[in-house]
Image 1 (tube, helix red, strand yellow):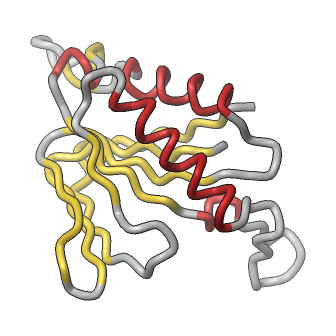
Image 2 (cartoon, rainbow, N blue to C red):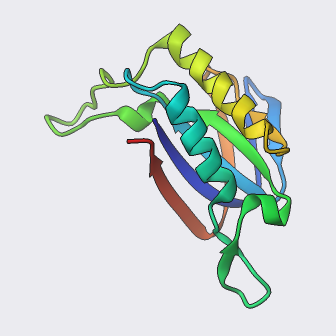
Image 3 (cartoon, helix red, strand yellow):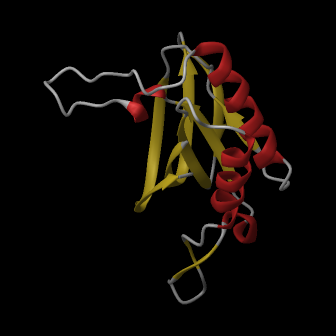
Length: 146
C-alpha cells in the first residue's frame, strides 16, 4: 500500500464537473494498493497518517499531527502510484490491485481514518477526477506499508 501525503490549505475533487469532496486545512492522500495489501497495511498506514507530525507548532516547527490541529482529509484513489516505467516510456500498472478488491480496501482505509474522529472526504473510485490541491509548504511525504 502506498500513500502520498500532501499538507493542504484547501483542496477539492470534482467528477464530471460536479464537486464530490472538499476540505479546508488538512491532508490530501493519494492512495494506491498492490496485490499483497490487506487490513494490516490499512491499519498501519491510517495510524501513521493521522499521527504524522507535519503541521507547524507555535514555533513554526513541523511538530503537530493532523489530530492535534483538527484537520480534515481528502482521500483520492490512485492506482497510478504503482506505475512502473523502468522498461520503456509507457508505465505498466500490473502491480496495481484491480477493481473490486481495491475499492474494498480503499473504503476500509477511509473508514479506518474516520475511527480517529477525522472528517474524510473522497473522490469517486475508478472515475476520471479533477483534483485541486493547494499544497501547503509544499509538504509532501511518501508512505509505504512494507
